[in-house]
Length: 167
Image 1: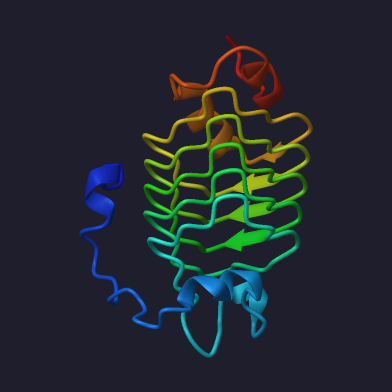
Image 2: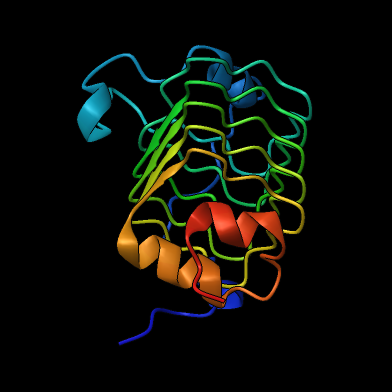
């Protein structure tokens, strides 16, 4: 059964956005406790953060709430985005080289010109996401993820070949 449309994802019951005025700065530290299972002493809340061009190389952002945020042009090389909620965020031009994106809700997100070279992409909800000019060379993509990407009308040209789309 299909999940909710991208516009409906933010109607899910989420806690209020972290009122700490410095909550966006926590992206530069990431999660340090129980990283693989997205367990931390507090939620990594990056919702509505404006972090264009941020250097998040090798940061563990597991379990982060990062919807409606701007990560355009961010360096996310080797970053771990496991169990993240990044619905309707902008990752245009972000560099995900060798990143791990696993069990992530990214419906309605923008990945225009993003680079997924050598990235691992598994269990990602990407309905209504924009992958115009995104690159997937040498990416390891789960079979269901590849199917969804191949069905996405914004995935064209060489990206389709890199993903393994049949036509």
